[in-house]
Amino acid sequence: MSRTKAFKSGNSQAVRIPAEMAYADIQVDLEISRVGDVITIFPARSSLHDAIADLRAMPRPPSVEHRDPIEVPERRQD
Image (cartoon, rainbow, N blue to C red):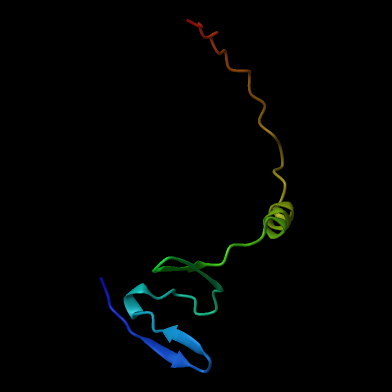
C-alpha cells in the first residue's frame, strides 16, 4: 500500500497519485466520492445517453444467426 500526503492547490486540497497507481491516460476524467473517511477516485462513467449513442454508432452485423428455441423443463412446485 502506498502513502501520499494531501497538499493545498489553489483553494482545493489535492493528493499526488503514486506512479504505480496512476492511470496511463492523463486526460481521463475522474469522479470522486466520499463516504465517511473513505475517498474513492474512479474513471468517470459515461451517461446512459452517451452509452446508447455509442451502441447506435456501432456497425450492424451483416446477418443475424437464427437459433432453435431451447427446451426448458417445467419446474415442480412443492
